[in-house]
Length: 464
Image (cartoon, rainbow, N blue to C red; front, top):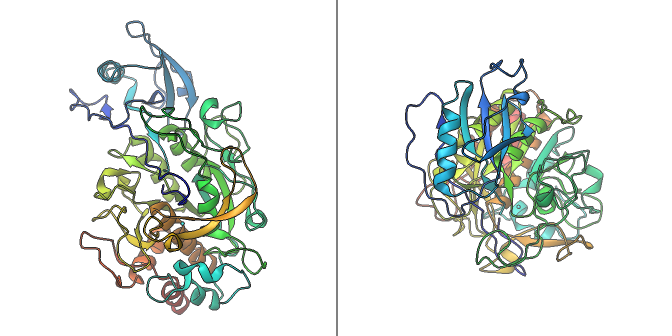
């Protein structure tokens, strides 16, 4: 996540660890984390494992030398999130606990619940002229050309897995019911765990709250900004326009105070795409497109991999930010989970790789992400909230990041699916990559197929 210029720039909260498999005779050495804190362990059981009576949510794990393992959240794909008592364990102790759990013959795999943080035709929208990312010839995505061909995302639902959403006159008409997947009441800041209220409660932090020596920061309203890039209402004489201004938005809250976790995010992926999650009502608005503007440095957790496979298997196109560490995207998750997902790198206003954007063979395509730290107006303008901590008045803000690049491509996917709802995730990815144009700027280390081009993609689909 790259925050508005008046806020401090946010990074990602990271926890790296080796995934232990019950089938393995020994585990590789654990990678030293940048932020040594996790929210429990994700354990996958064999379906119908002994002692579960066919329901893995009933699986109990024995106490390990004074460390209690409490089943906290039944998950999709035969997994359970266990929280340890005490909650704070040393790295060596955590690795030892995982090895012992992995030795249980009922267990398929065990991995830490990583903390992940986020770190975006002419209309009468008055700020459209500031949205260089949509219309400028050099590095814009040529979105008005797609609108001129009748592509608006009408009939398509896009799930934004993020910090939730705030009320906004440029968004409200397109927002349908979502869900809050934060299982920690403290992280959710709403007094409870998972519930049907996806409202962003603010992710402000005090100094040292999430990481030792890390300064506090105001709320980011990241999800509201991302949602606006996907589908801010057009032709309403208000503010900005989204790439797919007639798409419906499903806000799915997975990031809160100090970020989010793999358990919550992976379950949200399943739910948003129409799958079943224990204890959660079925999504009445299953999404054809999922936007994940989030990530951390780690190998792909197995829970992520299973969730993403299930989502694309249900026909959902999943768009993922490449990450903001100026490193190979192969080390950023969930960008490195593979499959038919679309991983998006960020470009600046000159059409070259933004200096923070991850890069390399893992990146499938690039889109405008901006560089507000160079020139404030070279960021991505979108919907926002003006509150410093709690929700304030709706407004607009400039942000930069691969978090801002990804929703451009999620919006493009909605444009394509609005024209042809039978497209598979592989079809959408192929069209986006095939019609991307050569970068007008530099990206020597690899930015995928080039700059995503909405006009060219819609033109190709219209001629098929």
